[in-house]
Length: 64
Length: 446
Image (cartoon, rainbow over all chains, first blue to last red; front, top):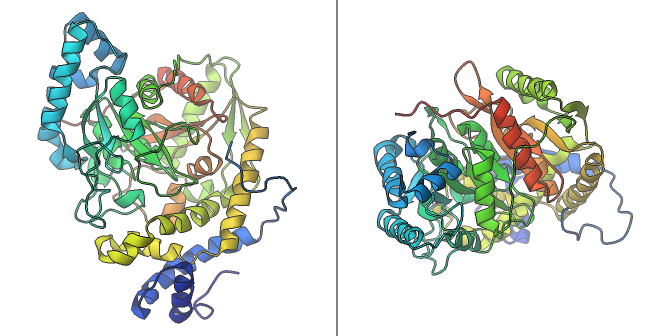
């Protein structure tokens, strides 16, 4: 599901960014929020995929 | 005789070897054109006047003494300013990270120099190749209409080639950054097979998606540059069109984004190829609609890890749009990244199967002509701009943007040719054949 404004606020995003390795102010998190909302629509579409790995080396292969 | 800037690389080399033209004259002409015209375009960040003239003089002496490095000997080329050129600061078109002056050339520059090319300067780009203009460096304007962008991120390289400032240039492409500006500027741009061109000494954006490749005024010139960048051989003689199996990719989203004028040029190109004997049929790949989502879910977190120290130390050194993109990348869930990587490999498998039935895949390169400004990467316009290009970064296949004709407004549109893994030469050979049907044009630049 995409992250809509009531589901993801600046404080939560700030904690997510910190977990990812970036410390930002609350004001900065407010600015980043719309970008993350927009990206999360793509994450939602990817989550709908059913690409069960047949086994083998999975994703750890060079593109070819 | 044609003006120097109108000569192909082969014609330039032939003139050198006949003694009717010299590398110093060619470099002087390039430098003079840059001095006279680049104020309107802003395609160069650094022009290496003294160094390029010295190297051209050395190339001239070598030819006179019988030392010949091949087709690129004494040919003026430009390098995108995120690729290391020894002794020249690399700005990445950013104020974040003070410009470092590398002691060594990037591997691809080393290869080009070994092939005799003369580096005349470093070209402008979107900041760190990440989709936004840094205000201190400014937009590269389009030689066909300076009120429009040259595109990104390799816009400086594309504009410099289109304007006749150099005979070829190096760009990088993570979601379309060679092919999009090539299309907007009406030149040839090749995103080669993943890994074909060494990236040692090239500022990364996304380890999984980055490619470096040539921009040139013809497919043959692009082939010579690819040879110079890799040390390989890509003769790329025009392909025989009769019997060539061409798939026209059905891209979900085309109805929403594809401009009628670009569609008309694409359909006319396909009709010409069919009339020349190519077997043309529509093709489709399931889940292609998710390619841009997957690209961003890989690119964003990889770019954030790459820039982690810099964004923490000098956040205000970045343009606001670049900064937001880097910051947002830290929030991408690992599950989204893994699903994107899964889709990447599944799409690669589907393309392998598709290429059992066709020799090449055609599409427009970009759904529209050059806009006034570059759209932001994560926004709707950014997704539209990458509609046709992103998937080939994901699957690592060679993809070539060619001049596809001029719209009624007099602006170029790009035609994309994609081929199987490591069939880069086939893409260039088909490009050379297309050029016989749709001859490249030059912008009306004074």
